[in-house]
Amino acid sequence: MSEIDKLLDQHGTAIKEVYLDWENGSKLDKEVLDAMIPFYLDRKFGNPAITHRFGWETYDFYLKAKKTIAKPLNVDPQSLALTHSFTESNNLAIKGIVKANKKKKKIIVSEVEHLSVIHSAKSLFEQGIKVDIIPVSNDGVVNLDLLRERIDDDTLLVSIQAVNHEIGTIQPVKEAFEIVKDKNEEILFHTDATSAFGRLPLDYGKLEVDLATISSDRILGPKGIAGLYVKEGTKIKSLYEGQLSVEVLSPDVENSPLLAGFVKAVEIHFDQFEKIKDHTSRLRDKLLYGFQTTIPRTNINGPQGINRAPDNVNISFLGCEGEALTVESSMKGIYASSGSACTSRVLMPSHILTAIGRKPEEAHGSLLMKITRLNTEEEIKYVLETMPKVIERIRSITGGIEL
View 1: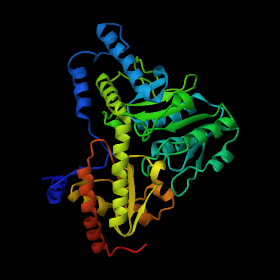
View 2: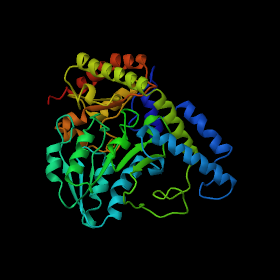
View 3: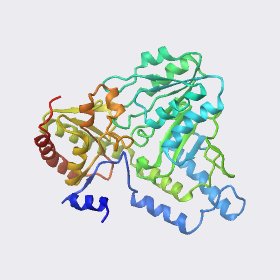
View 4: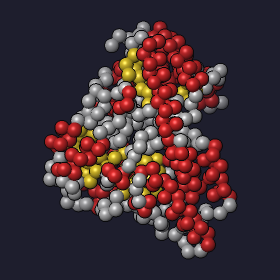
């Protein structure tokens, strides 16, 4: 028996399971899987760049698929580049722009961007790129006054996310975009809309951002496929070279089964967009209110109400430690995460929580939960009944460390 097998055996099986770690891993909607299977077994699995019947059939599907995915963004389907993940999309947005534009040497990002944005920007240091990081408020909102001050003649790109992936802060992207373009229309503006896609209305045809990142798995589509909207006329280069491909910015053989899944996920989700938004908001508020009223010494991380993404719950249980929280919760069948997947196996506080002023002890004692349309009222009731006991047990062991 392996060490992991032993761990799972000791862990045991809970009487009920509630999955709330959608930020770090998601399953497929059954209809999405059903839509993908024929593309593995039947037709339209050819290379759309090849001129024979199977290639033409796949190319026809490819063009129609892009129209479906681009519709919720209100953008030209031909301006949507398909990638293998939102991490690749963010890397492409940052590094691909720098690769294509050699004169300007400054990138501005917010302090709470996803690490795929922050690390991409910082990795360009050896190429002479300066990275200016803008701080945020205690609710995680980017400081627009400082953004305005930091923009100069050397600024090439500004990247401000639409929704924070950990604390759910809805960023003032429109205001940030207008500040940037008022300063200089030639400065490019990227928004990582991964955690906003399917949560908020996104009209990038009207707002006219230059680049925007989205991902299939955020709406219960398959992993391994995402998108980067690149406004027509934007100078950008691929990060790597590859074979003949329809997708110039991500050269590879297009994966039609994953694309079929992405399309079906978009169709399902956006057909009931408001219903899903209302459902997740209601369950989110039940969790936030329930934790505050039944568990002493709790802090909500991020804003409340309309300024918070409808699916996001992030709360610090003072006097607890993150690994103990996830393990004890898991033993009760409640699956959440402490911090983000980028740091979950490293004993470091989340950069998002420290950016909003949380002490390391508070950050370590946080739980991140996301809610989807698959979660139910009964599941949330179970979480609210169970978590006070989990917190009480952890505090009884640790002595409830005063902060």
